[in-house]
Figure 1: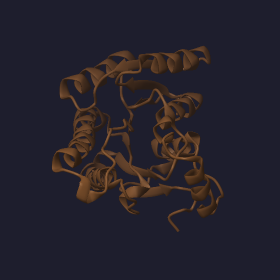
Figure 2: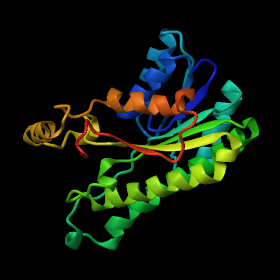
Figure 3: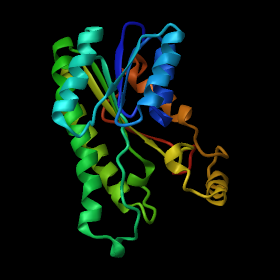
Length: 246
């Protein structure tokens, strides 16, 4: 990854932070995008720079086109290029059984998830096309293919994201750009703290590898898709769930 520049959205915590750490350790310059937790993002950047890596934290709401334009232009101004995008920013959603949910509760997740992917992709692509090189990774979820109640809003939005990634792969492959989707199962992060220990134990017992994922398990797969080791893979969607989806 020496000389590569990678933008990681939602990069301050969880999967995004571990992705930034791994990519930086492999020589990439990393831009850590965050929405509100500046402390976490700047702490991560301090950690990476102390290790000798190039890193920068930039605040931006990835659903807002002007803020995304600023995010990408600042990245290019600082590092001269943008080689890869990891679209990982988490969007909140309502957890309810379907018949208890209104359209006004269901639709924001769909709009936020796809608008973020649409906006980010549309802004970074001209730079990648110009360089005839790009790696785009969208972080989805196993719930898109394996539904669980009450995650209908989350799973449906991520299914749309997975399809979106395939369309980007199809249209821009001729420009040297790949687009792939990583679909984690349950991961130990701040966003899954609401799950009970009993539930986590049950999920571990159902998983062939005998545990639920840590953020670094997902980050390593993202790093593979960002690297040239995956140069002949595009439009794929890989489950990173310890074999649970079997």
